[in-house]
Image (tube, rainbow, N blue to C red; front, side, top):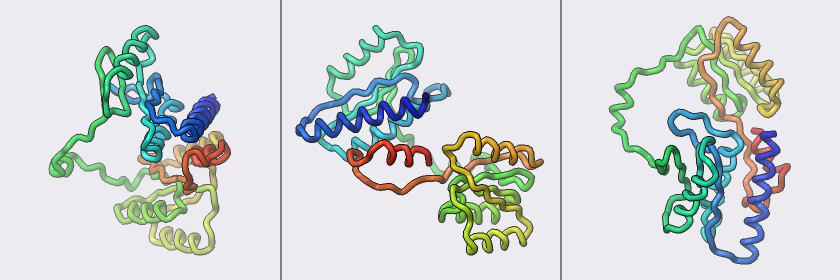
Length: 239
């Protein structure tokens, strides 16, 4: 159901964008969601949050259009939501992401923080008796991160990737293991829920519980938004 919702919204936005681009229309597009943004520690809707990422990309690609997301909580009734939609659509604003919670309007902002404040926070040390998982573990970033974790003291690292290590990577991993680390590779597609569950369950029961997961998996498939079809979208989302 999650992928079905994402597919429907993605293809609708793609088709709409294709039409208005061909017609050379210049206007604002309001995309209304419920629970797409995490506010006050409430977990976001996965399907809605995925589409928000697409809207951000579209705003960079299509300068003549402005895609604006107006987000409400799951408890907001229709009448109240429509009042807020009217407020947003009837006033000029540069905001492209707006959320309403309990009559309060939220917009995203970067917060300036003195680097010293971060350095003074309690550090999170890498633990020698815990496991660390790296998705996309056999890519350049994954292998570099693995090496850094080992230098910081990690002993149990699991590299997840859709491909298997070649001879060169196998030799590199064997060298790490010879130095006392336990680096294991798992051939798994991150979009395969059952296969992923099996890997995580195995690691959790290994005696060295999971302390951190680094999600680096991705697909490099560059194209304009309107040039994508659903198989290409799905391939990227599955990563």
